[in-house]
Image (cartoon, rainbow, N blue to C red; front, top):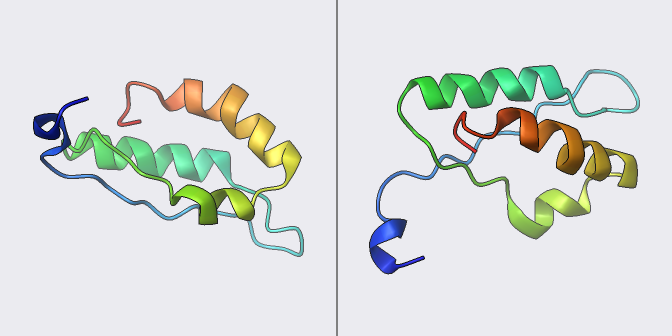
Length: 77
């Protein structure tokens, strides 16, 4: 990575969650958000760093890293 590679736009999309008491991550809606951003030409996303991770359950982290991130790779992730 070089300083030149950091130029441009980095989207910081919201993390969609389902309504209800568990507020589970809505992976389908998050994928739609990523595809919409990528369709607009933005190819780099940042999902909130440590603050983002502090609000994930272990199961959400596992599903995010093993299932959802590989699914959206190439769509702006």
